[in-house]
Length: 298
Image 1 (cartoon, rainbow, N blue to C red):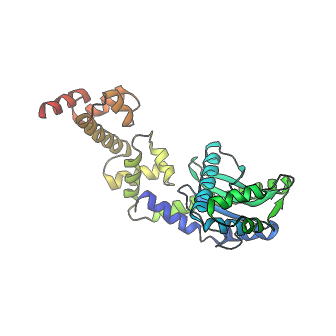
Image 2 (spheres, one colour):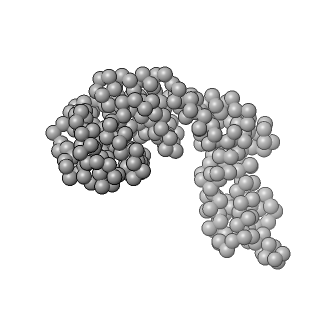
Image 3 (cartoon, rainbow, N blue to C red):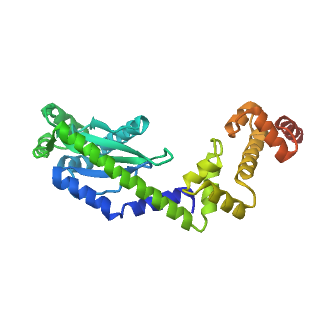
């Protein structure tokens, strides 16, 4: 099981957490709005289980263009919240106000975002005939029917919205804690957890990887991680990482015209001197000498 598969399993288990369903049902009973969690990969927990969806949203998503517009609005808001690291209130293309709250784990890794919406803000102008006609032109639906769908739309004051944001943040702590616990258990219990770690190293070898950072990624202590890695692989983490980086550098030296400095950077080395030192310790020669030997063989 690789790292991505572990994340998918964690997400599936997260969707079965009863407490998250209760959080959703509670806010819906109080204010009539829905909550959902969208993972970093764009998957939805569907906490409402298809219930309580706004009639206009249901109508728009039956249209391919309407569904695409909804998706673009959601993805754009999530991307903004992720980049800013703060909650974000915005108007979607259908004229509703929505809230998005980004979630990060203890390592600062983006997990996804909590969303809530499909309401109007008290005192703000609402969509009129012109806006509904534009929606109708986009989706091929009837403007009058779309307008009628919004008759009973929830209206929230700014004070209520502040309360919803606070509620989502509390809910976010539960999701983050649950996510981290599930990640830990999945990583511990996975019979091929070392393969998942190797897969992660191979995908991210160009980054500044350390024992501590990778151990945190898999919810291990650094000491435990070092022990199991050496036991299963036969070499330490840094030796394995350096050898993998050198193998990638050898490929680039033989197959590309990138400079030694460029290859050093692409392969995750901190400097050319470090690259030269590690390369020589692994291969017995320098990167430039290795490239010359490869050119003679051609």
